[in-house]
Length: 391
Image (cartoon, rainbow, N blue to C red; front, side):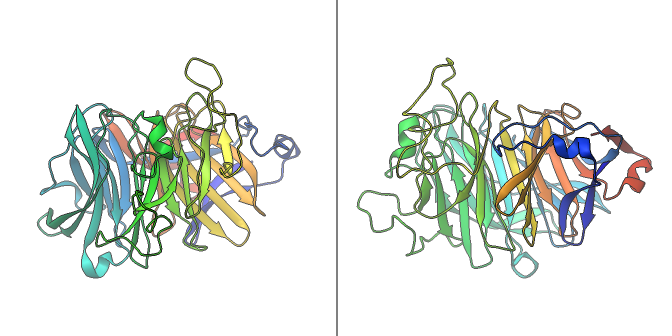
């Protein structure tokens, strides 16, 4: 029997012993696992919506939520007052995959009211990814004191933006940037495409960034060789930074992000070209990082939340192509379990977050997307308004 449970400040999966369940675990940590048959159910409650192609969710200290809509709207979901749109956003290019993307809350929000937004600026013919720093006037539902603190290299394709944000307690901001269908730029340190960058939250560049003294390199670059990273999260317990990214035809990756490292794209990949032919120089090359985990066939991962305690770490990942909530459980540095929950029940899952109180939330990616919460115990599965989903 299997349940999703919440304990304290972290979320993880608990499993009662079942020989058939444990025999289904693969020896190879990169091997795909089938969904295990059980007789248990979890409950998924719709919290808010519909939203127009929601892209990201973030929690304020009081557990109210911010939801971005790719069309350029930012919504505040208050558990008492309901949903209200926040005014004062910048002009956003909403075209193809472009739009308002991520929202991150400053760790000192309770004192400074600061938010960060990633969004696409420009035209369908030429655009850049920007990061906006602003203050939230909660009483008047408006952004104030707006300032652009980063703008990426411009490109022509309105796809593969990356766009995920992570903010640290010591005042640094990380941003993922996709290759925008210009593969070679992912290895070019003079361009932001295909990189993860690190700046301070005031927009300045830290002096200890790995390429800050390299002539011709963009000083903001932290890592390179990425394709389309749509997941980025800090393990608050260890301080480690993790990201996942879309491969081409297969080869989606989960990576531990370390400064100055080359993650290989497009030179090495565990995926294939869309023609079905091999691409690059194979799956490995000296000086290039191997993924911690990869998926073939592709799941198109989007959104990432991490919960950890002791030797146990759980990665919660949304899947667009896979239409699932993916759980990777890591024990002693190895993937011990790989589950795809709610598969094809609710559609494409765009973002996954853990609330300050430890509850797991996610949003679905559609013209009428919704915000959902997984109920904390099986006993709550029968609450009015909850939807039951068999694992």
